[in-house]
Image (cartoon, rainbow, N blue to C red; front, side, top):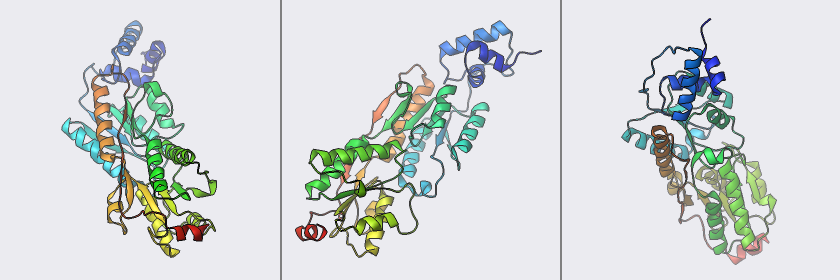
Amino acid sequence: MSITIKEVARLAGVSPSTVSRTCTNHPSISEQTKEKVRKAMQELGYEPNTPIASPNTKTIGIVLPVSEKDTYENSFFLETMRGISQFCNQKQYFTTFITGASTDEILQCIRQMSKEERLDGIILLYSSRQDPIVDYLYGEGIQFVIIGKADRYIQDTVYIDNDNIQAARDATSYLISLGHTRIAYLGCDSARIFSADRKSGYILALTEQNIPFRPEYYIEIPFIPYEDSEELKKTLSMEERPTAFIANDDIHALVLAHTASQMNLRIPEDLSIVSFNNSIAARLTSPPLTSIDINSRQLGIEAASQIINHIEDPSLLPTKIIVPHHLVERKSCERLRQELYGQCK
């Protein structure tokens, strides 16, 4: 009976896919691991079906979050992918996009591509808590980079991020400097690490100025609504309604501005707004949005640079890179009017 790849993997203490990549001298596998696998192959008398040779694929898989209706409308993903493609093109690496309607669907795609040796590395365009995709990539020894903060395997993971706590702190402090104390926050799913960090920064800035955090001022909308948001209407109808809002991204800010307009509230006279991403939507809406520019394209460039560096030299230590942000002032904010404060009091 012929020896199988699973028997080699069992003896070497690695996964079958690691054995397979060793057979093609894949650069994502360390020399130490390759030696261990080759020793097991020799001991068992295993003969690979393919000769040991360097693969020619040079392909980076770009994993988008589970497909929701707003994913492909969000400028963050478009700009980040632009940065990745720009750098990969210069280095003559191909890119392929991986997405699906569920985590299982994405995992199945990654497994198949990995089995067929069609992936040299992975870039995740998001970071979530307890992500099974990260567990799989780490367990299989597949080289990957996260755009966002790592939730686990932190010492072994390459990630590119903004300081989202400081960014939200800056946005909140800016509104406080304009005299606002009734500041609300419109976020997305807090399972997304960047969103949880921005909430922390928002609360931190309030605490530093002795402004109490009011849970009723924190609204979480996981997906962009195509109709008016009842939660936003409820908050904007409060007797002590907010005079200012921080929106998690420009699209959330547009939903907020639309809802405010439906309620005859003017931007910025009745409600000041600071958003995130500084997309074309922030520049073209009326009034133009004050927005935190997180340099989305640079996040993509850095992610592509790091994944290629680690593919070509797996001995490199995991890198953590923080891309700077800055606030772009436009016309969606103004100093709090005392008569408005009196009306909301």
